Image: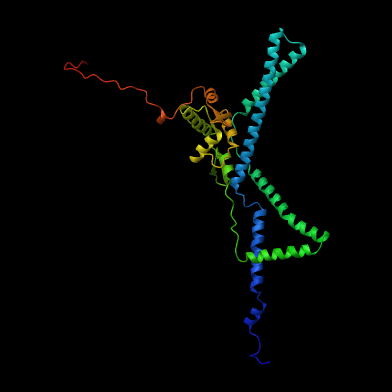
Length: 330
């Protein structure tokens, strides 16, 4: 063989270079592996979402504790009231019933003290360790989900037939080849709208080390909500209605950009958190959970006030007499 017939270095490299399909499949496998690692590690969830979820869990636990104490206090008061009525009708109680009355009064006081101690929910600082723990828990769940198909393929190949492994391998290769050189957008997902609505009393601030949730005035959103509901009920009364459905109130708030993502089923609890009583209200024959004018008037301690621009002008035009030459009215 002559020197001219010997393969050049470029031809040797060209001979060892993988084909287009193999290169495409390899690139796709790399992109899919990076994406799965990104998802399994919980990196699609932002730090803000984790902070808000922790704050929401605390708020839900506080609300549950308040509702439980309110329920037990009402039950104890109801029992004590019943025993006092029996005592008034019968001229006293037997020793066992007197013991029950004392226990009911003590239980009612205990739950009332607990309610005073709970007060309004105010978010406190969140330990960074809690955020790391929440992300690790998401990672463990995602990794478990990823292991399920792999375990299924192994068990299927062992218990059923080796064709299961062949089909799974062909499916994986096909997915890699289809992905090719198209990289995944490895970003964090946006915070869900319902979570933003549930934690509207929090704003995202920035410290020197990492972003944290800084609480704003916990009573501000309640005052705004009460003012909106008061005006809505006043307008409804002016139109001849004795109540408004909670869904209608929520819809009017969402048109103003408030409580976006809040569902109509969850909104009544938000009204109760703001001190607004809710009950089933019939409006034009449609019975739904809402706010009744009379109940709101009791809760506010005054009649719901109309917005200023809707208050009718009841003043009369009184003619002013013109002064005479002496400067006195004629």
